Image 1 (spheres, rainbow, N blue to C red):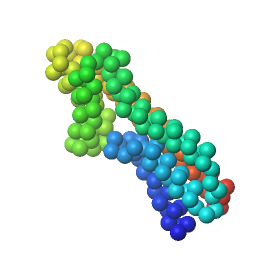
Image 2: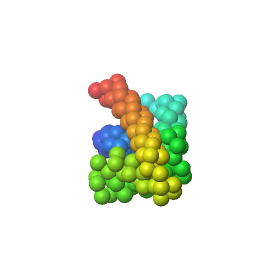
Image 3: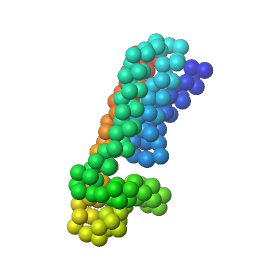
Image 4: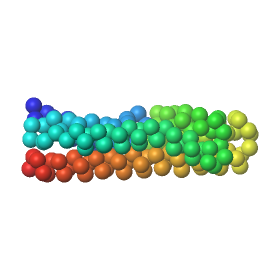
Length: 162
């Protein structure tokens, strides 16, 4: 059972890092599940304070990931149409363009949404840049937290299992 917990928790930590870039996986929450599982290993002492704090961070980052791109679009002068376009563009871009679509999708979606709303190319370009900046900020935040959780996981393994 301990080998299974180790393998599954390792996979969740790695999936969390990948999930930092893919919108279908909640990166830090997935990594946190890996931390939770490794604490179920018989050689690892339970630390509920650590788990609650890291869960709070993961949940906060998860929620911020939905807010940051909208704030970026708004900050750069975008409307709700631009925000919706960025969200739709992210999904469509990922489906049709793969990894490139993760970056291009929100940009093109916000641009299209703003053009449909106001038909002002300059404003649409500015809002789409805001969506891109917000999206990349969210990715950076998720990736940073997932890497910190990888560090915690590695330290737990090093201290208790090696």
